[in-house]
Image (cartoon, rainbow, N blue to C red):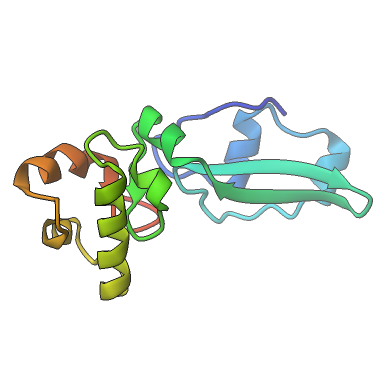
Length: 139
């Protein structure tokens, strides 16, 4: 396998992702439980080996990488530090977003950010392209 960042026209399944990264050797293919479950944009996938065999580890790319690559970040999952990766969101605004998110139990729509102190229409228009509500799929 070759590490890298790969682009797909839709969310690939794990098999497609591994093939794009150069595939696996025969031993690994027999050991890994591949599924047709889609891998969402911005997910980091690692294939690791230990004494029990090969394992697939998934996690989020950092918000800074996502913003750089044009991948929206989730306002319902991102940390204060991750939110500050978006130009226009400083530490104070990021904390206010997290407080409002916790108060609401999460955001249902992006425009709910307008209720956050420090987020007005101008800032909202600026940051909207970098954010999403859900964790996978479209905004």
